[in-house]
Amino acid sequence: MRTSRLATLTAAVQWIVGVAAATAVVLLFTLEGADPPSTTSAVSAAALADGAEIYARQCASCHGNIGEGGLGPALAGSVVARYPDPRDQATVVATGRLGMPGFSSSLSDDEIAAVVAFTRSGLR
Image (cartoon, rainbow, N blue to C red; front, top):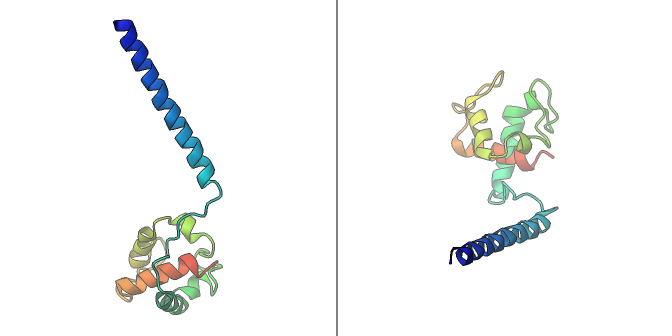
């Protein structure tokens, strides 16, 4: 009786491991080469245009007209890698970091969100 329970349990565990391995392989090949999800898909064209204007007025003097860097670090092509979660980037814009001043007293939350969206999609 114990032997049959052990055999049943062993077969169940082997089945579960096999299903998990097959699922992992399917997911691996399904996701290979897929683009990461867009962080700005819900951002309107108007918000991006607002973000571009705010960037030109508030950010370009340090980060460069096209995000190439200068007094501040380059943002073009690197900001998403540096801040995978746009909320973290918005916190830096609002509160500042190292030599960068915070903009929470001069920009609204919507304006900060717009400039974050622009730097994530408009600076490539």
